[in-house]
Image 1 (cartoon, helix red, strand yellow):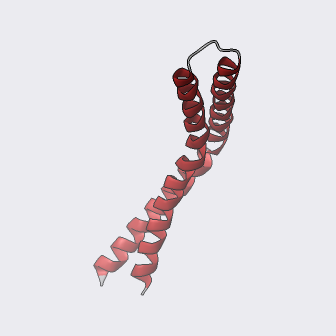
Image 2 (cartoon, rainbow, N blue to C red):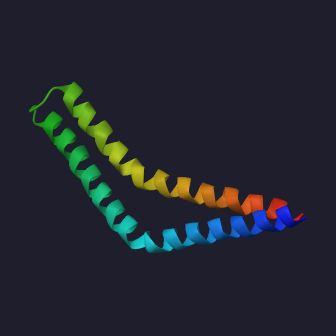
Length: 98
């Protein structure tokens, strides 16, 4: 019985710390996302224009475009991982309430 309450308090503390960290990192993450999107646009435009003006081989231009797409995808997947951890802790809390 006591172990159930200790686990519940521990999970609430984890949830509170994760929420606080998310709030504190929201502005720097938004600025980082803007930077990554900007880098993505630069890489994709460089690849397309280099291919269009025949400055690089098709393989190099394809690599630039793929790297640009990867930079553009990073801001979309990173918050998903943090949110899924919070969801996991919330599910564990709901299991202890039963």
